Image 1 (cartoon, one colour):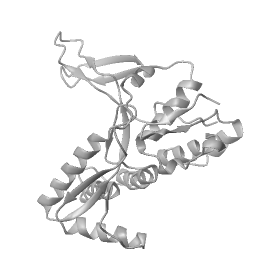
Image 2 (tube, one colour):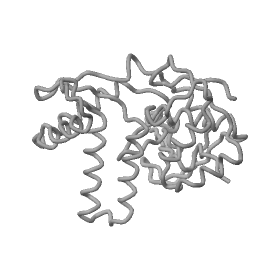
Image 3 (tube, helix red, strand yellow):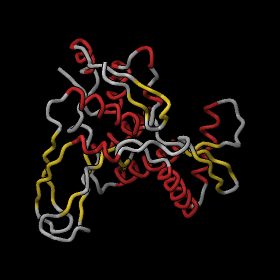
Length: 261
């Protein structure tokens, strides 16, 4: 067993994980490599200590990335990363080297509860971070983008659908007393789709601002329903201006991999 860690969205909840066995890593091969979120759920639920087990599909996306990071730093011998990238400031190719453990210096526990109240367009809403099962659904939608050209109408429509679905996953009515969950989901879905375009963007901005209030875990960002870690900021080597910095995004697949045979 590794040392316990707290979920950044719920610091009172202690979680313990252990190293996977060979037999378990064989089971992880059942999940397609592109289905990163589904693999994350299977992996983290497998390696959790039974005494402190909770379904990680209900953890926030940031909780899950911290857990993968925790496993990775306890099982890897080399925590250094070497990245080539095109600098957005001087347009030259640079190489950025850093220790992944440095990400922990910017770790944050959530301030308050992992929920915020919002009154919008005469309705009372509850805003919450995206959970693991939401990320799985968004990932499945996002995988559909690969079969379309980026300038095609199908691609643009699917990207828009992902955007709307992500927002729907982040909000719920607190003034809806319907017992049937399906009907509650349908109700808020219809409400969002009936908003004017201007109101929809206003809602997006307000929800985004409340999500910023609930920042937690390792430095990360969610784009198009995909979570990626942020590298430490570094200065462009072709300038002496300390304000000219770059922050790289680290895809899941290349860093903190889930063990597979």
